[in-house]
Image 1 (tube, rainbow, N blue to C red):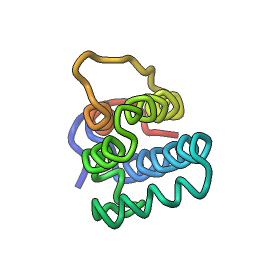
Image 2: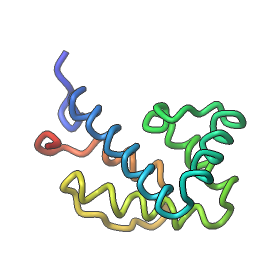
Image 3: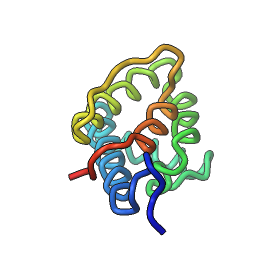
Image 4: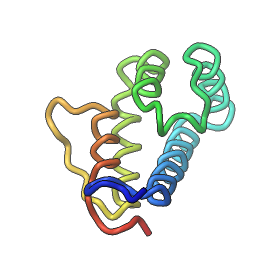
Length: 117
């Protein structure tokens, strides 16, 4: 079945998911290092039942986990992820009042444009 107007194809969605995970890994690894990243992922799995490969589908759970693990620092990490992810997709990142991480991700999933390269 063809995607509806404004929806990503399966291949584009997979590419978005892969780029999101790559970006999250790069940011968290750069800031916290391998051991802390590993511990954060364990907490996400054990406390939030969030597996690494489920993050693109469960961005709200990921956001909640980051918020509880990092407290107010979660906003900085989320902003860094978004500021690095958007250019990889050829999309200009603009802060939006009242938006959270999950809102931006939903926008990326719905954006109508040429396939992700």
